[in-house]
Image (tube, rainbow, N blue to C red; front, side, top):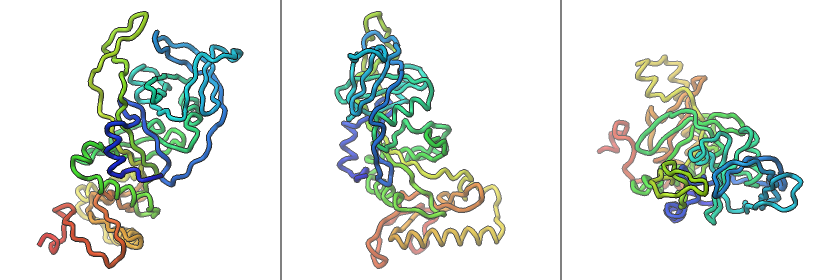
Length: 342
């Protein structure tokens, strides 16, 4: 996948990123780095918004990758236009915001051309998205936001549904600007690199990681009035779109701190089980030369069956060997060991 969270690429994307809310959505490979060809050819009807006169017309689209041609009818031999899909980014969020239409997605080309295309339903829309990408990648367009799980200084955690599989995930959203401002680039990079290696029943698993950047283009502003000739453009403020996304297991039982406040005391057999699961998780991490460094009830999540899952690797550290000593003073003050505080 490459070093997604490297400081150079990280900061560089702030000025020249390839999308986000208010812009097109960036795409990177699945965390295991696998990729493969999509459909080399695809054809069908889509409804396209005009560039000058903002009306919608049904067009016959033919994808002969990397070119996406559109015709007035299937019988036409000369396309009305073509889109080079090799460098495009896609966004359903922006399309919905700008057009108000369901099952609509935006195609943004680096030459700053915007195309808004509408399909009959979500399944058809996602089949076109997959074909246009031509590789196994994920982006914000692949997920539907359901609700907010939590909010903190680090960013947001949202409950999302993956459209292709209907599976539920927890999506951690970080602002690049805040990460850089708080000097947490290395911590964020470490968290992602550690999580991508972990496959353990009692540790939260990372499934996808991708990032977005602001789209530097003049988008039609909803405050402007369309004439029969064109829509006048303005430079109204747009929401910042430089975000990092980590899509992880959705552990629906809440954290141990929440249950501790409600129950006050747990049965001893239950505690024994949790301790055993925590020891197994910690032993697994130590075998990978990973130091967790932020053990607390808030970072222990319970699933629907009551099993424990270790979460939040923001302060974790990858060491070279078990003999390596760490001297950084970190963690949550209320849970620091007395000898560390001294």
